[in-house]
Length: 161
Ligand SMILES: [Zn+2]
Image 1 (cartoon, rainbow, N blue to C red):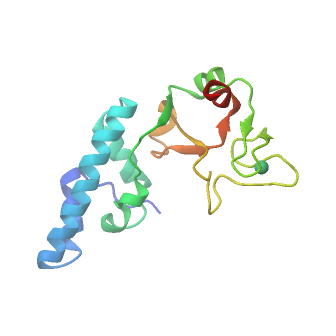
Image 2: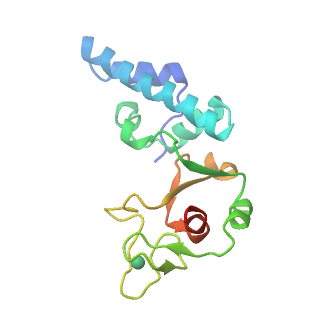
């Protein structure tokens, strides 16, 4: 269930109100730090305004502010591949082939290895084993304001070797 969309100040005050005294202040400070650093970083990477990004965060929030605005849920956008649209992504990686991080063979699916004996999933517990890439589509970012992790497209492997 979606919760009420709060403003920047309301988010910080809600975090403060979850506990009394110093602990409340510390919670407010921690939430403020996440907001300040992520809004700036996500704005820099995507070019989308901080106001729009904050509303997108709030729309995605389904728990209280203290539990939602946590470092682990908002990775800093570093080494992400940014595309305006999925069409631009397809132009950049036209082969539709990816290297599976587990068996290191080609997969025709960016999330689940298409090799019969492998079946590795990028969204599983061990993710991409540090061998995939993170992508953002600017036109979809506000609907789902986190980078997507996928297997490495073969085009990037060819460039690296
Ligand atoms: Zn595989």
